[in-house]
Length: 266
Image 1 (cartoon, helix red, strand yellow):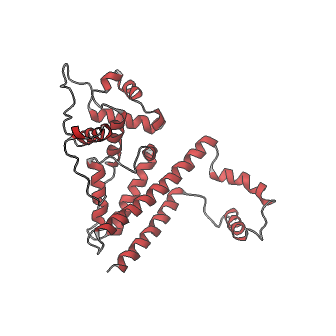
Image 2: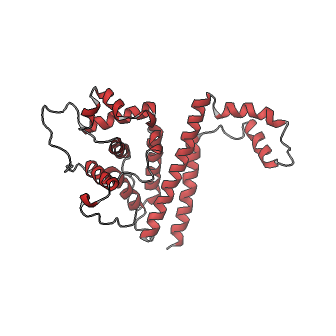
Image 3: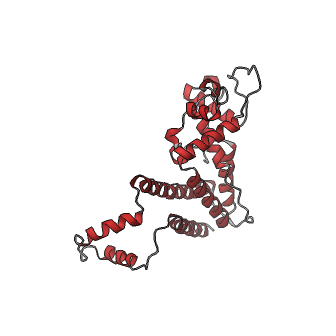
């Protein structure tokens, strides 16, 4: 994030893949595509925004594997060829979808200087949009589209830790650390939900089946801590699994570490 992007110069001099990125960036930022033919005929039935919203609704309902230009065209009652006049490829459509859902994250409303509250707000919203749109984990968020919404949220995260005595490199590393934690927690939650859907069994139901079978196999002398935790859970001393509660616990422990690091730099 802190590295300066290379000067790409003339888009026509780029490799084909890089030219696709250049066209995608232009579309994300609302710039005209110089390669697009002039539109003729009647006024379009839809906007690019309505195409993106239809694609998001489809991915939310059926998963990213169900997303295709043909399916989106069917939803909008367009021919596949007509859809390409709005968005020229599925890759560019995905970029627009990702930038759109990231736009659901609101800017932190806490006062300036309250970095921890600001970062917590952003992290919680990232968690929330991944619950609403789990397909974003499959859509290349490791190299997110550099659209206005994605960059606005990156700016908000960096601004939250600015002025705390950190170097630019440390600011970048701190925001990456938090983003990586959120991504990992979301992945674990989404995977668990998918396993429940496929098996038709909750984690509690699965453990209730496994427990009696393990009871005669586990030697308490070999696994004393595991047995103690299992007994505490069975006795109701440990609350039932709650993925959001676990996310909150982990987030605050990560921020405890960040806070200690910030204090060490002063």
